[in-house]
Image 1 (spheres, rainbow, N blue to C red):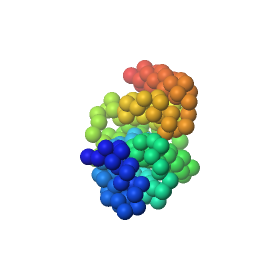
Image 2 (cartoon, rainbow, N blue to C red):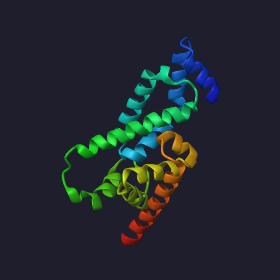
Image 3 (tube, one colour):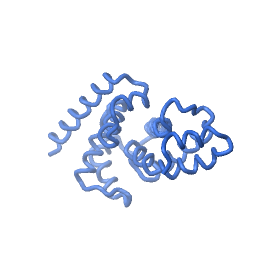
Length: 181
């Protein structure tokens, strides 16, 4: 495992860039997969998001100057790619408007790559019902245990706004479980 500084040095040098990127892919692919998976929910979509994010990172490697950590830069690309994917998916027609109540949890439980139980599936369903901003700050804070300052750097949103969104998201999720118990 390379340190962030060693990785930054490899990526900034055109002669070692490819090696640095190979290390980056090995070191961060799984983390990016789970960040994307929590946003887009399915294995196939998460794989597509990660592949697209890594391609974008490679194509924009010249824009990385080391002001932030490599992991923060890469996470920002992956999260933005997942959010873009999510926005595009919302524009596609769906089978049924009220599929949401039973559809998501059942789809997750039927997914071979989903390793959670029914409570995990219901939590994902509750999270999916949140507005985009609340959902994303909740995912980054709850699952990735990111500090609000790091989420702020990734999303470009103030820490105060992120804290408010997180606490509202927690209340909505709690209420969802109360109503569906």
